Image 1: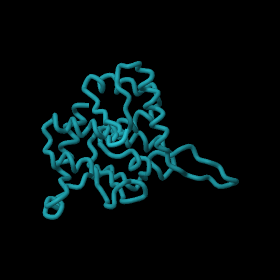
Image 2: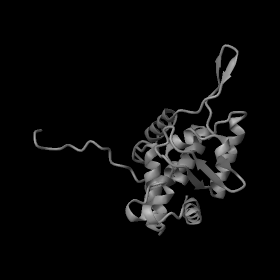
Image 3: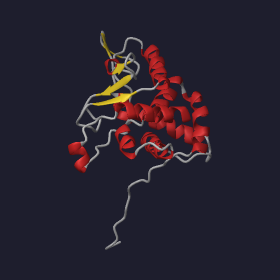
Image 4: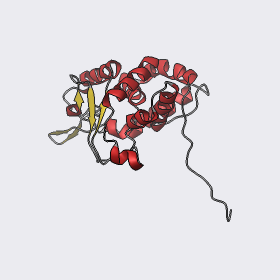
Length: 203
């Protein structure tokens, strides 16, 4: 209609405590790898593409960190270090066993090309499809949601848990913007670790 701007941007879904209480116990029916992916995304509040592209060299089980390199579809031009809690480290450890000899945290089945074996990472669409199935199977008990909504959900719950807004934004690898971006170069790693500990304890 002339003169009227239509906003077609999809509204983000912030999953409630009740919805999380339904979703998390149901994940086991969709395969262990898919369950671990969803739990990691929800627990860390990171973008799905960052996880899809992660390699085992990015995961430090000793220092409990996950390093996300810049670029390559990860929507960030700078390296970002995610602190991983005991729960999150456990999820990665399970994936490590399942990944076999692949360099990727989430490999697809190896594709054979002649005599060569090609190692490739899982595609985001796999998880999109799983979440569509999950929401359909739950038959209206939860609102339809996407992998990015898991990120939005974590951010919303950080506020409920009393996490400082700057720390919460840095947990999501958001730029602080303005003067904070110029003068505040502190990475808040310890504070972010504490925030994720609180969030994982709630989950």
